[in-house]
Image (tube, rainbow, N blue to C red; front, top):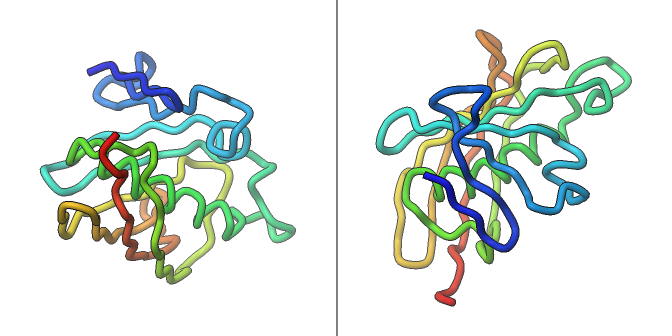
Length: 152
């Protein structure tokens, strides 16, 4: 399953069997330049896991993962989930809303995972929810809605 669109690459990750590398073609853009390496895998017909590997520059003055990083991961994970689980075109889709509850701190010492569930899909919309976690630590919960890309 290798797919390259104008803006991103979606292909098996040779370093992590069973995972997909979610990568923007232009590495100077937000996903790659800020969040860094991102991988994903399906964990059932309606669930997937999207993972980043936080670095020091993603922490706040308390030494925890910055809340903006958590929000950024959630936002990208919505589109990754719709692509991975439903085959939706991630390019041209837009976020309509994200409701987030911050529950605990994250650390740059461990991978940060966003576990996403697709609740419902219509012709134009995707309704999702999930959790952001690091091993046994719950970092945040969320729900989100995206508008899928128009037919090209």
